Amino acid sequence: MNSALKWLPLVAAIALAGCARPDGYYHDRNVDYAEARGSSPLVLPETRDSQRYRDAMPVPEAAGDFRAPDGRFRAPSPQPLGAGRAVERDFVERRDIGRDSWLVIGTDPGSVWPQLEDFARTRGLGVVASDSSRGVIETQQARLSVRQGLRAGDSEVRCDQGGAPVAACLEALEQYFGARSASASSSSLAAQRLAGEERLRVTQQGEQWVVQVPLDIDRTWAELSHQLELDFTVEERRELLERDPEAHDFLISYMTVTERNRNPLQIVFSPDVRQMHQQIRLVLESAGPEQTVLRAENASERGFSPEDQRELLERVAGLLR
Image 1 (cartoon, rainbow, N blue to C red):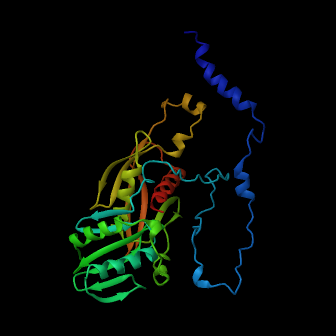
Image 2 (cartoon, rainbow, N blue to C red):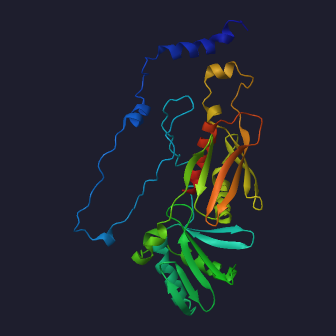
Image 3 (cartoon, helix red, strand yellow):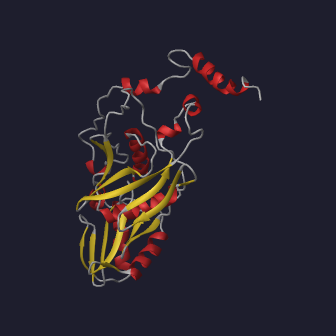
């Protein structure tokens, strides 16, 4: 092979890079983010019926200033809707960790509550006490409860007796809710406050990024395990390798944003002539009765920058929202 020909791809890449104007061929949307200005919030009339209005599509607060280590502004990438099978969810799903079990229902607690009341009534469980503000129904056979799930728009339903899950009751609840759809659910205004809990946030601690989850560590591990199993299934891109419920951690294989963004020049002059994935450990740590911290720790010899860490945690957090 002519020695001059092997450099043609490199020459072409350099030539194409030099053809662009200073501001690029395409509109740089990073500028739109940097120059965006806030507007006055919408004010509803004082005469409105306040019970008819609540946050249907709440916007989470952004953590950090979206500035990369080099000081330049970079717009955050949206979570892809079609990535993996996580978007294909059942209306009712089971969660387990150790001896604990519960159901995740794909609608808000305000919609689940009246159905839970109907379940207790039609099954003749003998209701002893009912508290919509706490989402608890005490019956002669067991204790039924509903609360906000980890993901927005989800509810967690339990059936316990003496602090232990009742398998037959959970199976009956699974069949009961499985016969219904989210669109057919009515909503209880008295129980809507159950959905108002704080959501998870991606925050910076020094040079490290973490995800703060407002749930206990076992519930968080069970939900994350389920979502990783569905979404981290792309070979050489993102894969779930191991999970340990006792240590509350996961070992994944992931191609970092730094690796995905390597340009042709970096690839040519690098010993790695193809994009490589690496092993990273996702670790959950308890920070209180209802607070869990998720960290991403490098488990390989390859580089793992704060930008890589944040991008991975944003993706994982997106599975839990």
